[in-house]
Amino acid sequence: MEQISKIKTEQRNAGTVDIDRVSTLELVRLMNAEDQKVAVAVEQVLPKIAEAVDLIYRQMCQGGRLIYCGSGTSGRLGVLDAAECPPTFGADPNMVMAVIAGGPIAMTTAVEGAEDLREEGEKSLREIGFQAKDVLVGIAASGRTPYVLGAMQYARSLGAGVVGVTCCPGSEVDVEADIGISPQPGPEVITGSTRLKSGTAQKMVLNMLSTGVMIRLGKVYSNLMVDVKATNQKLYARAASIVCSATGVSQEQACETLEKADYAVKTAITMILCDVDVDKASALLEAAGGRIADVVLAQENGASKDAYVRQFRDI
Picture 1 (tube, one colour):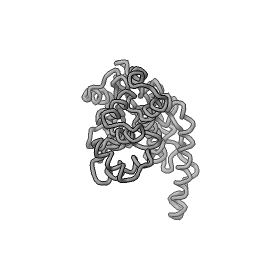
Picture 2 (cartoon, rainbow, N blue to C red; picture 1 turned 90 degrees about the vertical axis):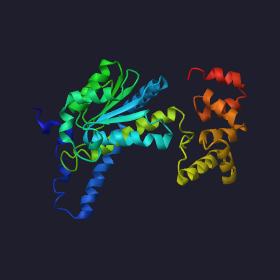
Picture 3 (cartoon, rainbow, N blue to C red; picture 1 turned 180 degrees about the horizontal axis):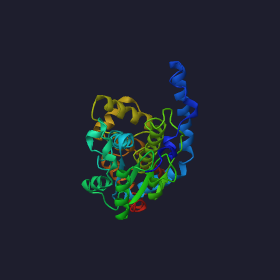
Picture 4 (cartoon, one colour; picture 1 turned 180 degrees about the vertical axis):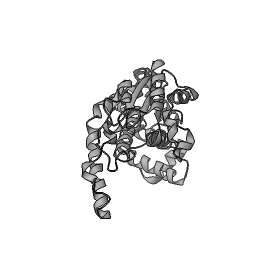
């Protein structure tokens, strides 16, 4: 059995050995000081994150999905990120999915033994119909979780793209991946409690992966989430606010246009910016792969509809 003390995420933090004897204020200061190291660690792996975003984007353009896989904290972070994509970006729930060792119950109850079963990782992917055009992101702070490794090996056997997110460079998960993303935030405040800095680092990476892909897919215009689905009063108000911010029109005009567009925010923005009706706006967006910026640019350049469609035919 591997000597656990040699694993980076299991090493003791010399700066917090007295954390059980300090004041509460000093305790949280120590934690805050350690947390500040996380963003710096993630910064060191930005090129790898960008490479993974581009891979996932290419596969999604071919009908593929982003699938997260993990156990414990790592698995829950994957489920959390996947669950946020539909309301934030209007993404189909099947576009970004997550599997977790132990199944859904593991989201709220620790099912620690489940992570030791390598064959369960493959089984989880088979159950969701994982295909070669999908991309698997295996998440494991230590980089050695059998459940994750089993899923990664199955994905590779199909020829699918595989990304690893760990906090241990050179670990099995890091090596097994086509793209290994391994920020090193350092030893945890509480030895081995990878829900802390390691979990924060992993969440930051997942934020960039899903958000970066959604931006590339045209689900963001400027920095506005223009594919948000208005399903309650709060989101109706947000939709109107987004239209106002993107176009500079009044709240009244934003609401009127949204009603004509059946509360499709992208369509409403395009109608206003390009001064077209709902059908024309929808056609322009479809031709541009849903990217408002490209629609506006083409209109500013005076492109005809036919030329515009040809321009974006292969997107």
